[in-house]
Image (cartoon, rainbow, N blue to C red; front, top):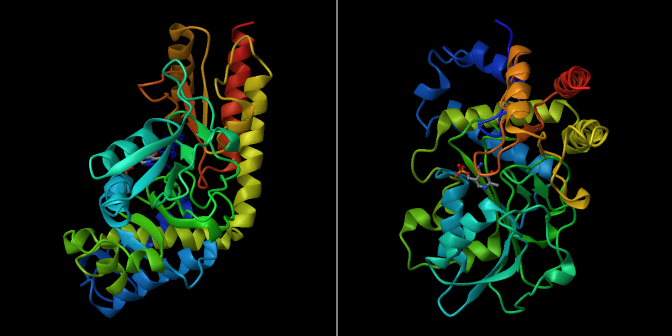
Length: 362
Ligand code: PMP
């Protein structure tokens, strides 16, 4: 059976090379007599994988010595809580930019724990079609941090330039666009991402957190929720998701082989440009509701004129072995998620089908 062209939003397509490497090593890892899953997380075999995964994150993103790289559990949603648990001291307030479902999720979690402000809210008629402009932000200069969602996976919107928050650290949920391009980490206090889009399978959450914020983090919360616990133990305080981290290692090794983030950006921009051009070329049939300046390079959303045409489109795509194109139930339409692992040939195939669909519908 041929592998599908997988446009799933996450868990999402993984690089074939990373899967094949896992298949080769699945039953017996590197001559050790057992699979990596069966190794102790305190043994040498696993430890090497664990440290290689962290080293690859550091190398690919150019993470400086002033940051810890943590591999945690609980998903990005867990970080919605862990960020304020650690950084939002009593008496302080945090700023949140409300840009879509995920940003609202982060805001809601923080609100349950402390004082938060909406520094911007771009919701209009129940929809999110753009990211805020700098001049729309109402920033508290004394905020503990400013939270943003770099890419709204459902709305298909993305911050293309990060806002200036002065001395206040940025905290970013980069779940759906981490490592899509080189990123200057200078203004960030925390970056977190569930792995299951650009980094690997679900089950591991990457957290890159500035050392001074770990040190000054709250100590009056359970140790398991303190960043310092994981930083001090190199993310081995309790049993980590060893197989998910092994897969993350495979994915990042592949990404490095492909030329790292500079090459990834070039491929990603090319894929997105081709797909948006195909959508814009036929405004009678395809429509992208997102403002041009905020269009996501990772999640390309578009609609067709009627639910019937959308159903026909999805069915036709399925017959051509393309899956995962249905938009999120909250917004409808289509969504093509084209993360790092989606080859340009996959986007070409989708565009070829879009053109064929056009011909069929005049
Ligand atoms: N933030 C963003 C931007 C996401 O896309 C998602 C998942 N799709 C989440 C947070 C939630 O992640 P998790 O399921 O890992 O908790």
